[in-house]
Amino acid sequence: MGRVELAGAARLELVSGVAQLRPEDAMFEAMLRGWRAQQTARGLREDTMVEREQLIRRFLEFTNEYPWNWLPGHVEEFTLSLIGERHLAPSTVRGYQVSLRLFSELLVDDRYGWAAACEEAFGVGVHPVAICHEWNTIAHLNDYEGDPEARPFSRAEMQRFLDYADDQVDRAVRAGRKGALAAYRDATIFKVMYGWGLRRTETSKLDLVDWGRNPAAPELGWFGMLQVRYGKAKRGQAPRRRNVASVMPWAVDAVTDYVENVRPRFGVDDHPAMWVTERGGRVRPAEINARFVAYRDALGLPKALVPHSVRHSYVSHLTENGVDRRFIQVQVGHEADSSTAIYTHVSSDFMNTALRKALSPALEGQPG
Image (cartoon, rainbow, N blue to C red):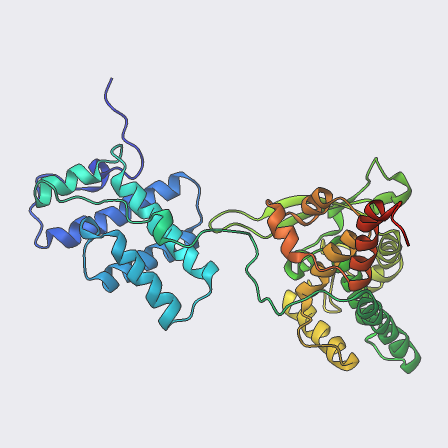
């Protein structure tokens, strides 16, 4: 039986018996076609492949060398230019390095035949080498590398924020304004973000069917479990799903009231979205952000508080309540405990109480 070529193999992309006017350019373009074929076979999205190809072309232009002449030093120089000149975030630079590594791995893998094709075309010893190593790329230490200034709400701040959101409903009702339904919806949005530790985009994309019963907590009824279908995706992959158990009964009461008594008044029973607008559309992340900023600024709260701070608060406050860290990690969809640790900010009162608990066994029996 003949050998089956892998998608992306040189033999499938190179035209044999044809003299190329610009053999180097022809080889490079064939390599990119091969990489696209390999990624397509693995189910990657078109936009991901386009972004990666653009990065490879940028790297070629930066080095002024073809892939079979690339060296690890080129990656170091490119990285320094991204950080020192363009001031890109470490997570962005790492993403670029990952693309370079994946392309390089295809070229040096004997199964795809690109090294042999380069030696045949350009001479013995002329072939691609691995260019990305641990010592010249940024290590992926954790999943979160956001702005360190972002912080969680204190419990008092969170209570003030949610109370203010509720007050807007009462004000709209007393004034006879049309915005009462939207204000009630937005107040419930923020309660859901906090009550289930959700990101802004995850919240906006919730549908009614994402709620369900939790056999372990039947008292919470139909809102005992939430399926998050649009969790934060890894680069080039589909959104990650997770199930979040309801742990704050007051938040369940708020959602129940909204779904049963408020949402029907929008008159869009056939719309799947949890959060609908008065025009029959789905509430967008930008609209959540705008309402959050308006409430925060009206209360005079620090601008360091952003929509993601609500999610931080969920982790921090559950930690203060003594909830198991592994449980919290699963709830918020972190693969590594180190990510949850970054989200954890406990209050000074909690720290003082924990300190006394830690010290008390050692101090028992000691003279006063």
